[in-house]
Image: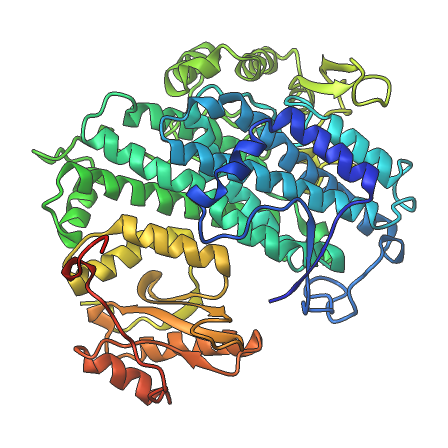
Length: 450
Length: 156
């Protein structure tokens, strides 16, 4: 494969570098230690890549077989509008995740884990840079009152709480969050990038291959340490337990599912040739993939607990445990991780605000459900704004003080409420009025509004 | 034994295949080495996530082939495809799993502009050499040399 490499115009490149100095202060430490941790890999470079030799005809949708678009102004207005929303959302997630990871990066127990996360953060910065490149390399005036430069400025001013997608507005509480986030939320990213690889907008499609190559490492940054933690837990180490890992799985999986958009949406993106799968199809595949990962983690647990078992024996033991049987000398069923039900702890999409437990059990009393959630989610998370906001909205919805539509729009989020300067103190916690919310993930075909 | 009735499919390797690949390695070699396969697989995923392959049957991984394009190896400047690791579940050997994996990998190398593919085989496992010979591989004018460092004087 070959790629064309470019950088943003000087002032925008410098703006990203300034953003990096503020939100990725350990960048120079990463570069200084690159040879030690990544001796076979090319040194990191902040730039945009465009893959050469990709398909030049539209691969899905109404215009399948026609030449792909190279400029936004060639596209139908609604089509370009959806595309711009996707680029903006993608950029927001890349910068947003760096801000989240930075919060707890220093708490890593293993130096390798810390440097893997640090590298992943640098690559997320490059992914954000890639999206800014798309915004600045085209003229978006046909679909946006804001220029590409203004959209870039807005994206660089976002903070945890003001990002486009909910998963990127939740503070991390421990390094376990860094790990589980990479394994679950970056996995959604892999799906989005894979789908956007066929985009009818050629620059978007050409941006994806290098991002996907890097995303594989991001998943490893989550899955590999998670496996170690499971093995440590099986051996009785005290710094992590399966119960803690389960609670973090419960915290993040619902947000990952919601990132695909409403289960019934996504038709328009397919029709416009921007993605090959509807939201529900992609979410199904994601859920099955995470289930496979959880099963593998449980197998690791069994093998670490009883190393003398061979592959077939370990599988047989795992099946018995998953069937609810206590296997003497190995484990009890409740020691394993279990896959949260798809309707558990949801605030967007079809099952939003259903009172459903981790195992699919249905609650009828909201207070009982809130107490249940407080047992099934990480303790530190309960004290944060995200969970408190969810509970407040849920109570009002059940009491009839909010409609469903109002509830999905009512999650508090940080938003710029005046001024355009990213340095201004114009970011405030706001709650949208009904119909004006970022229920975008629920109501807008899987793509937030631009 | 594997499910002999399932159709074999080939797809690019994914990070969640590690456990299945480690299981095939364990069936062949008798050792469970997931850490080894984590390192190897992520190396290949980083280099080219669509350049290494697994074979599945009934949704289960039954074989894998890892490789990559490199230039400059052993003084050979032209981009060359390297087939580096091959494993087939013993229950699925004899079902052309390896051949299908090789076909996908050779197609990938061709698409990337390679005119030559190389591999190294262990002299003590003639069945591996026979497999590659059946694909059209032939002896190359390169000889593998090795030195056991434990047998030399260190620091001299």
